[in-house]
Figure 1 (cartoon, rainbow, N blue to C red):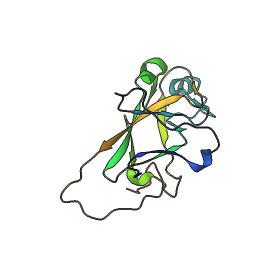
Figure 2 (figure 1 turned 60 degrees about the horizontal axis):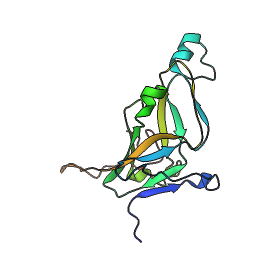
Figure 3 (figure 1 turned 120 degrees about the vertical axis):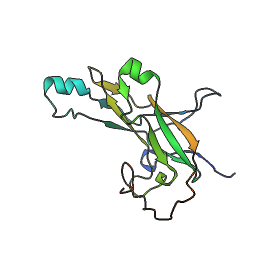
Figure 4 (figure 1 turned 60 degrees about the vertical axis):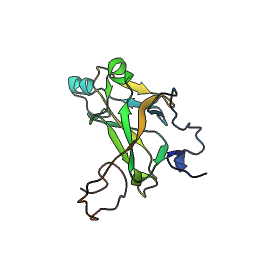
Amino acid sequence: MTRIRGFEIVDKYKDQELSLPKRATKGSAGYDLTASQDIVIPSVFKAMQTGNFEGNPVGSTLIPTGVKAYMPENEYLLLANRSSNPMKRQLAVPNGIGVIDSDYYNNDGNEGEIFVQIINYGLEDVEIKKGERIAQGIFTKYETADQETDDFSVRTGGFGSSGR
């Protein structure tokens, strides 16, 4: 069987009983990504209001999923927030979406583990439990420009790893 696209558990999580992402319904575009561990997403407003930034950094939190995605070179995995997160929990993806490139898979930096970047704009900290759905991943094709050159950098990890 030829593998085209899919998910795998990252090696360091092999014996932690994680599930691979799956679609909720036949018509769902996105695969539900879940947290690989319990984590607290600190409230930006709570930290600003109290002035206590120690142990409660203001900004984004990276939620580990324990999974990686493989796909053809002309695809990426679009990470989108769950539609219920902003309304029910005041959680947002700070840059709107996340992009997992095909060459992120099995990179030397972290084996291609997917992390979901979240910010909590609510008044209270939010606790995420292991196995809780936090985002959805949608495999998406893309095209390249005719005048593209071969002047590419080499991926060494994630979040700004291309060096550009």
